Image (cartoon, rainbow, N blue to C red; front, top):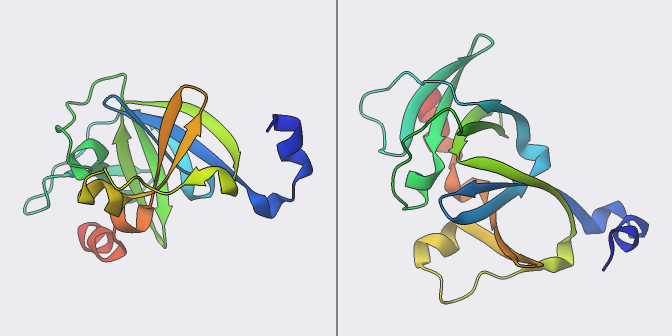
Length: 159
């Protein structure tokens, strides 16, 4: 379906997504959850937190937990550099940062184009991935932020 056809469909049928890379995989989240995208900022470590919690940053006077998305997804822990970015997400009342390798795209897709997560995926992946988008030569995993970043865990870190 062409981009022109997408625009003629109702807004309820379309979603805007932010796509980004983590390792050699591409993921996306609903753009409505994204507050901002910023360059890598060194975080302050916190004791006794899960391994995927890198620490916290000061975002204009607010303390924002920073999550290593690769580590959270069961991949190798990220060694951040100047090329990495932090996507600031809004999860309920709490802002949280996701460390990713790079933002790759802003997509407008029809909801019907989201396919179920294949059964061959690991159980952990199926728990974090809401669906898969097949676009041209790309396979993009749509993350379920509610399972990747459970509200009680995020609130516990930010408290």
